[in-house]
Length: 183
Image (cartoon, rainbow, N blue to C red):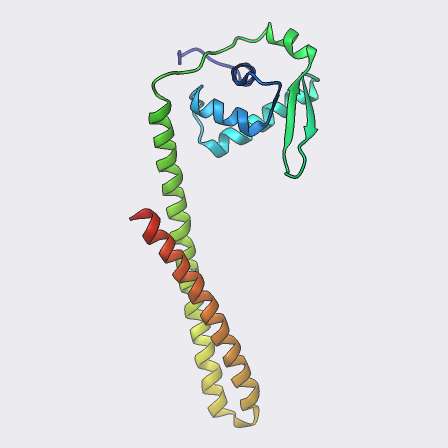
């Protein structure tokens, strides 16, 4: 890509033309922008960028928007005004050669982000497990200290045991995911 300043409209118009089909989704264009036009954003940011730019074009009457059946997504198509507006936009051409490298870098970044998220969830559930264990111990101790309310404290202890098992399963599942996918 040249060092010239490219407007958001240039990206969107170019992606629509590159896609070459009558109907498209914002996800279709986001993929093209990242993979073919080397938009300097990760895929999630590219989706957001694309959606916002498409909404601007819909509001200007350059694109039609129709709800796609059975999923939460819209299908867009160009209007005759789009072709007129295209004349005033500087189109860009798809990049070649760096697509694979950029895709690999983006994938590694996504993997690292997922790994960080999974590890923070593991930490969260470890802390939760410690709290549950502490509460269970307190209820068991209170069962002995206050025998007249023993039945109530045993029931609360059983509830904590159930929470412990569920939380421990969540923790084991997360650890298995990290071990299988990131080592």
